[in-house]
Image 1 (tube, rainbow, N blue to C red):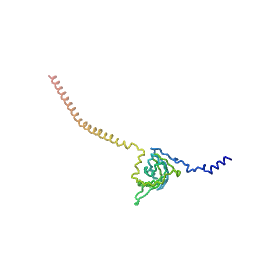
Image 2 (tube, one colour; image 1 turned 90 degrees about the horizontal axis):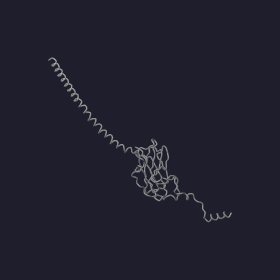
Image 3 (cartoon, one colour; image 1 turned 180 degrees about the vertical axis):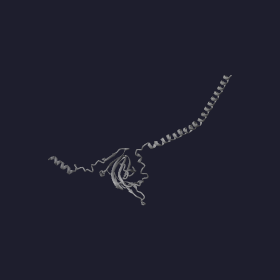
Image 4 (cartoon, one colour; image 1 turned 30 degrees about the vertical axis):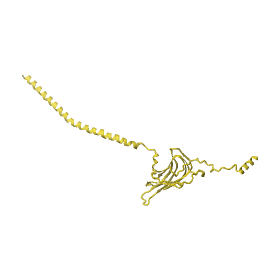
Length: 253
C-alpha cells in the first residue's frame, strides 16, 4: 500500500513518465544497410502496363555514400534501363535521414514520333531529372539501387531523426550514365582484337605467301628434270648401240 502511494506521488511530481514510442525510436534503425564500396538493391516493385511508376524512401547517407541508380525493365522484352544520380548537395552530411522520392515516366514529344524515359529524384526542393532511352513503352518493374555506405527505410523515422527541409538548388545532370560502369564487365571484347591482330594477319602473311612462293617452284622445275632424264636415256641408248656395233665388228673380223 505504501509502495503504491510512493509511485503515485512520483507520477504527480513528474519524476516518472510514459515513454513516447516515437521519441524512443532508434534513429539508426533501417530496413537495409549498405556497406562502403557495396552496391545493393534497396527497393523493388513489379507492375504491368504502366507508363508511370514512383516510390518514396528514407535514406541516411554515410561518409562513403556515392549515390543511387534507378532501374526499370520494359514489359515487352524485360530489357533493363537505368539512370545514375550521384551524391551531391541535396543529401545531408550530418548522418540524418532525408526522404527520397523517385519517379519514372514514359513520355512522348510533341511530334509523337517516339517515346522516351524520364527519371526524376526529389529530396525536399532539390529535384534532378534524367531523360533517356527512346522507343520505350510500358514499365514492368522499378528498382532503386544504393551505391556506397548508407541506411535505408521504407517508413518514416522519428521526426527528430529527419534532416531539415532541403532547399539547395537543383544541380544539373550532364551524364546520367557515368557511374553505371560499376556493373561487372567481361574481358572477352578486350581480348578479341588481340586475337584478330595476331592470328589472322599471321596466317595471311606467313602461310598464304609461303604456299604461293613454293608452288611455282615445284611446277617450273619438273620439266627440267624430265628433260634431263630423257637426255641421259638417249645417251645410254647411243652408247649401247656403239658398243654393240663394236662387238659385231670384232666378231666378224
